[in-house]
Length: 102
Image: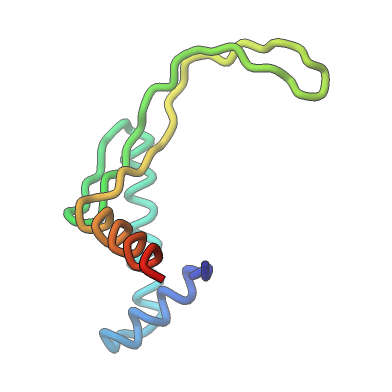
């Protein structure tokens, strides 16, 4: 598995659309900022074909401190999630099928 960084994405998009890297980086910064702002507000963000960002409520539970073995109460809280869209799921499924045939 290869790791693709933000800089790699900026470079690829800049090369593909022939816009300055600085402009592409600004757009990615604003997109990321808006997604985070809206998740914090409790909104759900949907990108057709890509996926959905949002928050879920994780119920209260008892956890254990692994060092001391002490039980701790973890209160109910919101956690962010990403749900892949149909197209992204199909790409993943197709890559699994290709790997199975090797």
